Image (tube, rainbow, N blue to C red; front, top):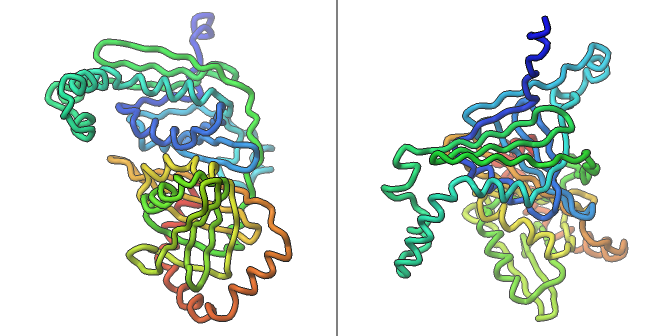
Length: 361
């Protein structure tokens, strides 16, 4: 009996991955805060970051990204289950905590450092070696030679450290990150039932737009979605001047275009710029604005060998005078009425994909 009682209980969570690249890329996309909130669920890990209660970013590590994923979450008693009959399974009590985001990202970068160092050494010897070629695996990389490593993540018990064990080429690195009490703020409210517009386009075009605007050192970014020209405009003002980029209407540029009423909001440019990494790795982005002026960006990231991953960002705009709002609403009515009705049908095609983005977020 004493021997059986001394057997340690299994960890609340343990997962193993053969590559940390998709994990690192997804987590780096919300690298705009020092601490990140972590939720452990049976379907994966959820990371959320908050900046001054005006910007939030959420990313998911689906269990598909791991070769092994095991959870031993606490069970809910019958009374608690009765209280949560109308909630989803993920609404039941689950382990949650905060960890240092910079420390976690630095740890994940250790994985594959051997190959990275070798590639950098070759780049130093051959100055004409292109950046693209420098990041490709060659015949002597550990992956090609069958010396692939593993990355193990575990969380033994509530209040304990979040452990990362990296094994590669015979070298084992163990890192225990201190966990902090969860202080996740309430999510920025976004009313999906009161959408003013919804637009789906290629993420790289949004990134290129910000790159065009950035040289003017802008302070603010104004986003306009309208039934008539400009259908989608991003304009900025700053110490170096002002600039704007207009998106023409067309299925080759705006895959889904649905505008219920003219929507004009201004945001801090640096906040929108914080989502640049998500724009870089994503294939598509869904832009949505609700009646309160909140902007929602949902990015779809395609991962080789796994289902697509999603990144969700929400931004609160600068306050707008009510008189200005009434003027803008008046401008949006009239001429664009007929076009808006037709475009609602165009938006139907992207509805299913956008629904998936919302569910993941």
